[in-house]
Image (cartoon, rainbow, N blue to C red; front, side, top):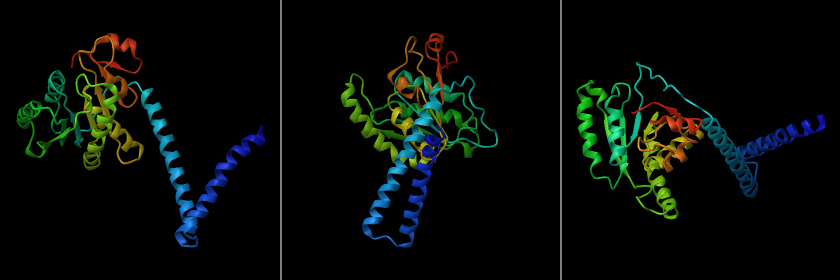
Length: 257
């Protein structure tokens, strides 16, 4: 038994020492071109394994986390916030929530919506005019970005996979540039690539974004497709019907938002 334990720990230690030696040779230029290639492959494999282990760890940790109370925001520091706007009822619910937020605590605000959404942009401008009356000029910073829709109404799940990947790639530059501290969303498919990217940035130690998902009020008995996906990635998962809290272990019922 003890021999097995020693062997279990000795193998990764030996490999680590071997890899350190190879990296040292690589840095000092003692390796030839083939050895440099082999060392690079080793480093790539180790990096991928570390990334996968951390990703799985964060998924397990997040999916087992039940948050009943929203994290308190310091009054001395504003939190850069990304707000995902859907369309129709999703837009109405989200803007109603943002309307009661304190602008000085959530700034700058970045609104993200589908490129096919022709009405939400105007509503966002109207909302920001209202928020401008509640805050000084330096807390009135906001911007609007449009991205390809992940899934259209009635679109098949097969083709949705490709449109989601396309939307995901389009979101990468925006997420790397803004690195929001908070992502706020309430169910539109547009938020899936944004939340997954925020989670990946956390996995890579590039940000520590908090993802808050509020399930739409129209979801009474079951979660939406977006909700089922983000159930494993959102730090805070809120629902507006008590039946959902009884059905799903990690959601928190907050009533009508």
